[in-house]
Image 1: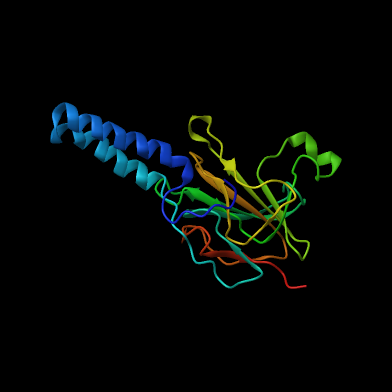
Image 2: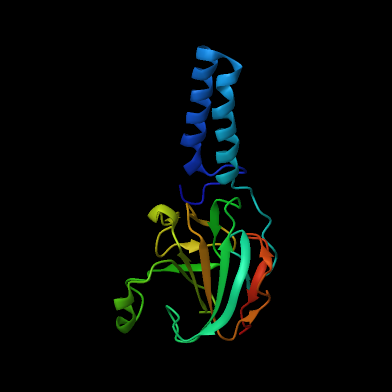
Length: 208
């Protein structure tokens, strides 16, 4: 599953779409056109939910791209960052009909939040994507508000490299994405702004 390209529908949704087509075929044999309408409508709805279009990643080596489609709801500074003490914190309300894939905000190495963190930080049992860039800047992506308890599912493993804007997880039913950035980063978005995964820049990391 990792890194596989799909220009429209996420692989995780294909079994559901095939089931709708099978129901439509059965409906056609049993009752004709009227029986096809419900599974056809369900197929269109699921195709929208699981849509996973390809995106053009901007040419911004130090840029931090949005991991999801949605609306920026909150921007601030917090002293409770997962990796560093003080961080920029950007919250994005995830669009229910946006891209089904989350994308990595930056390029770098995927770190292990359970093993690579300092000992004092492990008691919080953090979850999410932690990417360390080639400039040794730490960017953390977390998700909150899972519907039906369905957390996003990662597509890459710890220790692997990931590209800026590369697919990193199936969103499933998450409501909110949180991006934590080092304080020297320059935030480029405002609350209320709509952003697209892998395309729109949230911030720019400092140049060393």
